[in-house]
Length: 108
Image (cartoon, rainbow, N blue to C red; front, side, top):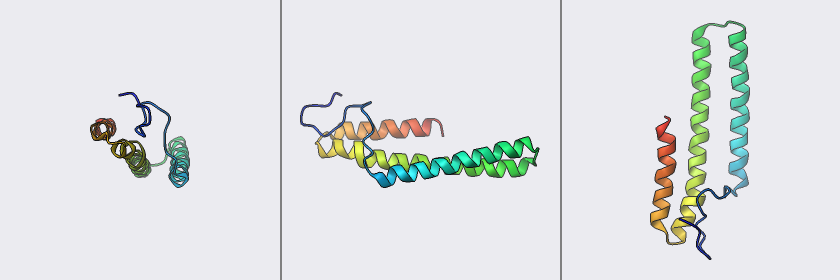
């Protein structure tokens, strides 16, 4: 559904409206930590460390990435979904929330 004139409901596919600096900084910190953790697992593999230790570390990476996804969903609800609701387009708000949840859960 295209953005109507004067509507605060952003058009689908429009640039991210994550305007909260704290959210963006939080996501960058989490992703940087994950990136370092992945490098550590690669070193563990190169050093032929035991499987259980590598499994523990990869599980930790997965849990950390799940937290990034949760924060992204929270941001999406606080911006795109809420903006549609405030603009009076509750159907579009629910559609966007449903689409986001489908994307996340499809690959869970």
